Image 1 (cartoon, one colour):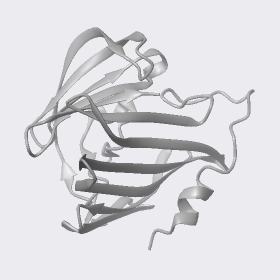
Image 2 (cartoon, rainbow, N blue to C red):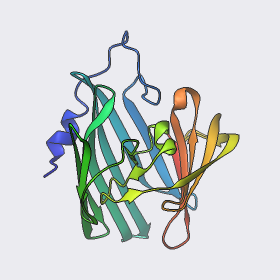
Image 3 (cartoon, rainbow, N blue to C red):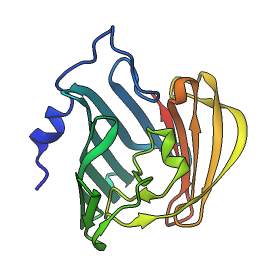
Length: 215
């Protein structure tokens, strides 16, 4: 069972200033986004990176609340931990409350590879090039995805759309490489300098557009 202290522990040790960082990891150790639905703020998505023996850990927190006046019409919460050791993903665990519907996933590496189970899949051995769909790692665009909400294996199609200028949360536009994802997943992703995840856009179940702006 994933506990809150596991997420907090994944954000406990800062990166050394002398340590070279993998592309996509901010020196601050924090990658945070505000979420806008048709321009209105609805939540946050925060990744906290921390050094660990032989690699690094990532604490994942997503909180969404769509409101109409004082009423919450939709709520979504995900907490997870992603652990990398020796240059590969060694372990992932997440629990989600999707507007009252619980979901979970867990992945653990052994000598054969990364074994995955979840609320919408039986246990399986992930393909060698599969990565958790946590989006900070641009390399995920080159292979299958492991859904971190429910463990399903996804095989999206990815098309490059060149470089755009996308706004950060403070309104400053920055150049970022634009990718359109279709098939098993439908969204758009942007990655900036050092392959840093910069923005995301997707259509919610009701057709409204949700945009991520990096803080």
